[in-house]
Length: 172
Image (cartoon, rainbow, N blue to C red):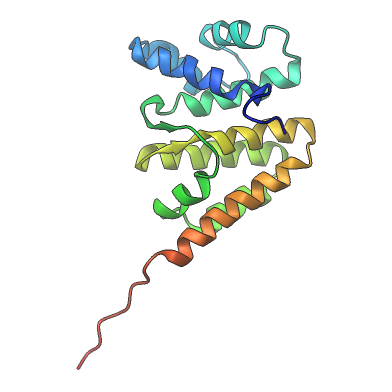
């Protein structure tokens, strides 16, 4: 997995491009990105050729998924690593949903990432970095994808354990 100072998979460049669309109030382009599926819209290609003009076909597919996720709520994007697990716990994302995210592979992973991103974006902040890394590392068959999963799970469970538990009132 590249470090923040290396190629960074292009994640930050993509996030900045989506933020720029939001800042310019280009709701049409953002909507195109959110709806993108097999058909890649012009908004996608404008970002792709600026950030990774020589991308191979599989990378283009992964990039489209990342841009779809980023376009959900550009105003809620939170940069940095190590924040996803905490956000999942803070926003009370169910254990079952987190487990599905941690165990999903292939197309199921793509689906789970978008579902979790949508839940987070609708309820609070969207720490996009680790979700994007999951999508992109999966493409490379990178062993680091398991490290990403472990860090997300650790962040979730540490924050769940630290959260105050509700104690039912006693009936005296």
